[in-house]
Image 1 (cartoon, rainbow, N blue to C red):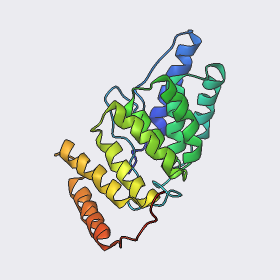
Image 2: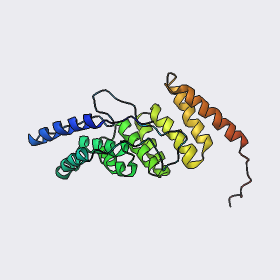
Image 3: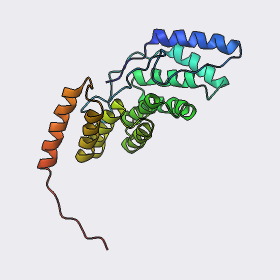
Image 4: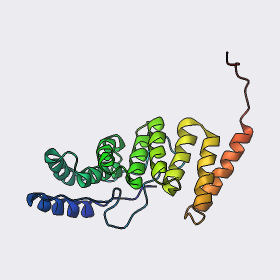
Length: 209
C-alpha cells in the first residue's frame, strides 16, 4: 500500500533543486514526502511475496536523470537521493530504490519514514532479513510507528513464516495506535494468525548439548 510520489511534483522539486545548486546553496527535505507535512510510509500489500509489490507506474527517466546529474556533483545530497528512491519505488524498481534510500538515510538517520521506505524496498527486493533489521532501526526512532509495525508483521509472516512474531507486531500496532485507519484489516490479519498458530503442530527438537 504505497503512496505515489507523483512525477510532476518530483520534477518541480528537481527544477527548484537545480536552481539552488546553481546558486551554490544546499537544501533538505523530510524523507518519504514532497511537502513539509509528513506522509504515510509505503506499506507492503498483504499477503504478498517479496518479489512483488505495489502496481508499478511509468518511470520518469527525464526526472531520474536530472537527479542523477545532481548526485554526480553531490553524492550525499539528501533530497536528490530521496526523490530518486521514490521514483524507483513507485515504478516497481525496488532493488534500484535501495541504494538512494540508503544514502539518504545515512544523512538523515532519525527519519523514521525514510527508514521504513528503505526497509519496504528491501522486502520487495527479496531481502526479508535486511528488511526486518531496517524496521528495527525505524522502531528505535519511533517504537510505535504504525507503518513500520504493520510492515514488520507482513515480513515476519510472509518472509519468515514467523506467525507469532507477526501477531506480536500487529498487537503492538493496535495497542499504540487505537485509531489506526486500517484497524479492521489488521484485526482480520491477527485472527488469521491466531488460527494459523493454533493449527501449527509443535515438533520435538533435539536437546542442546
